[in-house]
Amino acid sequence: MKAILPLLLMLPALALHAQAPELVTLRDPDGTVVNGATITVQGSPQDVDLEAVVVAELNGTITRTINLLRRESSLVPGSQNHLFWNVNMYPPLASGAFPTWVSPDPLPMAPQDTAVLNAIYRPNGTVGTCCFRHVWYDVGSPSDSSWVNICFDTQTLAGMPDPAAIGPSLNAYPNPVVGGADVALEYQLTEGGSARVVIYGSLGARAFVRSTTGFVGRAVLPTSTLAPGVWFAALEQDGRVVATHRFVVTRQP
Image 1 (cartoon, one colour):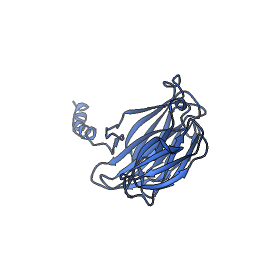
Image 2 (image 1 turned 90 degrees about the vertical axis):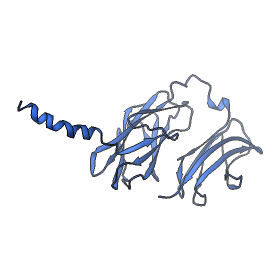
Image 3 (image 1 turned 120 degrees about the horizontal axis):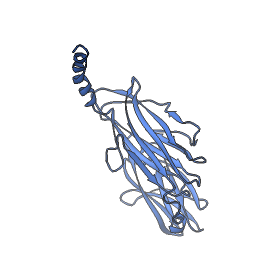
Image 4 (image 1 turned 30 degrees about the horizontal axis):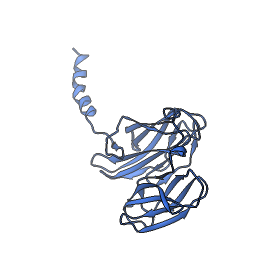
């Protein structure tokens, strides 16, 4: 009885701890909660970059300093990975170079504040599945954390036709992008000819024009003059639109 009684006294406290809310609520771009889940992004080994977007919202009633940790759980030699966390962009890392990476930029967050993670994977022609666990934690109490697994799969689609054989493409990241930061527009063309990347507002007004060079490349554009909201990027070649992509500019925190 003496051994059982302390355990019984602990059970209510353990139950309360088990019911405690997550440190942050993690959502994908569709608004689906992904805490403790695995997000899989499929692509071709020939893709320039693959991307997963996760929005973290702080729960509770107090301001906390939140940081981000990323662990590699499976590797694809020859690939690279990097990420945008809040407004910070970190350089690409070779697969296996940093099995555990910790952001040098902890972020003070008030309750219901949100911060965006853009996890970027660069296959560099490699075939396989590379997985990472991303952990958000309270700097003052590291055991208080939330996580999601993100896997990038270039094996499932490896036997399918090269995207270049299907048509031109245009992608934007980070997406959403915080107003004032740069947005990178990656394009792929399937034939030669003069081409350019053009940014349009929701009413069709042209905001930026940038000429392209080569079949594959990237145009980096500032958003300091773009109002918060939805914007449209178009890849135009020889006077016609061959690919489009929508991106969102958010307000500065």
